[in-house]
Length: 436
Image (cartoon, rainbow, N blue to C red; front, side, top):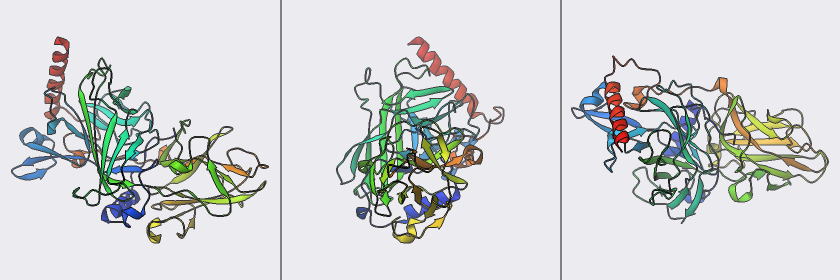
């Protein structure tokens, strides 16, 4: 699937801020569905020193730490409980997109994160002195949603890349652990204090909890170690794809259908040189006659970043940038100016940074028609908003945002004594495992 990293930019941060500040009544929005984005709040590790929160890494050695926001943990000491020191904060990138595979290939490495890694769900984090990131080998799915704030997600494709090791399975070692169900619990709330449950819908707050084990015998050396994931933040549920004219929508070739708001569910080839932002849309428009034209409105669910383009996939040409000419055009709009609705919003030509609605106008048989047939009156997708990798900004993973757990550049161990302690702990764990 064409899903890699999402450039975090001021416009997207502003959009999330609007969500946190309040939206239209959640009950009026779409329910939890494929294409929904868990826009989790980035984690931070802080240290309590003399009653004051500080972000100085060295001070973490001599004070009590507290992890805020979203994080994952590994019960590295094997005592059956997770201490705050075993929690690693995670920094949001594209967020967790339900119903889409978000794969990362060849980005983890030995040594600390550099900020140049191309990631998907979260930015690269530091674990035991080496870089890692989360990804999915198959899409996270909605298993249940009772409409009252209680939902479950299928996480069997949840994975970690770490220290150059690809796709460490975090979907659950069911052969060795009966507690590994591969199911996460998602709870939705109407308030940021997480006190009042409400239906999972656009703009509401959520908490996600998930537990599994690293598979026994895993090459990472952490086989059998308990893993936990905690996310909190805001849920973004995109609205339905809508045809502007008299045409009708049909299911696409890569799993897009009315049921999942025409988001692709099947794996698509990687778009080398580009990184997808948000959903991959997949549909067909029947516009009625050979060579006909039609427009379609796509609620993106995330803000358009700077330097964005719309990329289309065809079996003949692979991934190409949307062709704009007299018969094919692209426009965007800000749904917040129209009560959160893309239909009826004011569109301007091109892609405007910060907008979250997209309108495509295409003609049957032209370059943007994936089937390439100018006689059938069918215009086919799929496509997605994307940015060129060269234009992608890197995340600031300095200790000012993530405290003791994440760093942007290699650190001199003579200047930061915590790495000596970390190395000692790693050696101790290796000794424990050798004895076992």
